[in-house]
Length: 410
Figure 1: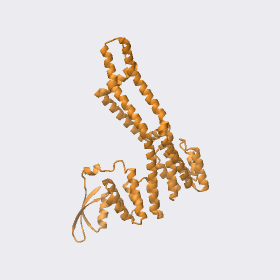
Figure 2: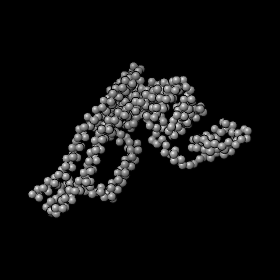
Figure 3: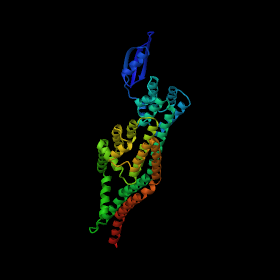
Figure 4: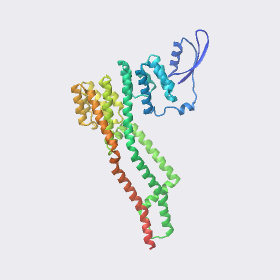
């Protein structure tokens, strides 16, 4: 929020200004700390369309986070004081929404808050995992080192996401082209078949059922009311699905279904196992207590079935159980493979759990890479089957009536 204030200094001079703050009380405290006598404070309420258009909708992109952390880490490693480093970031940032957040972080650190708390307060920049790493760095005096770990975390997340998205591009293009071809044939070619039949004026000629089906679809979508009904129905289904998926039970069911999808289910499982082992290893290596590390790791997982399994293990660890035993007891959705649980148990027995988790993370990361590299080959049978069925169905619907007409004319 933006506040306009009027105050008087010790010399009796009137001072007016504006200040960004979370509440009116923050502005009051700021002015009192400056030894100013407050005359009035009012909130500025206006619509700044430039600010709205430049707002950080959807959060800070991963690539921009990576650049931000790398710059901050480099400056801290070079011996530049934290406040000066933050000021440099504020000055060089062009994106208005990010500049405002960094300015608030600077003001928070300047007022005595820790860097992690200041970033947590503004939100939208770092995840809970990354904030925990920064906090651990501040407590241990190794902030520069922990910022490098945050950089590693962001790079791993970016690479993992890039592998999955890149592997989906080719199948998405093929399916899009196929859908466009089908739509063009239904809208333009099928009606001509109907017109040709009507022009013959033969009662003994009847369109095949597949052709009549496509004619019905064509007429439905060419009718403005039909198109509106379809769009409204699709939008209603989308909203209904979003509402269902936003409930705890609905999200769990949707995420469990994702794990059963051919090809993609295994990819999601491997990606989640990579995230689980990598984040937990990184937090433990940073000196964060195991219970807190498990809680943070659970929140870092994207699939609800994985998240609930890991989160449920916290109670067992609190009671003195080993992590492997607690995970095994709560693995009711069977998302954690037996080999993983045995390797975690080995790590606990040897006292090198963080190292074992790091090795497991590398293994599953390699599995994800191999799967994404071969994803096109794995999807080819499904794409060919779908394309073949659609082409055969359309060919039958278009060429069978033509064949019937030729026989009738002869």
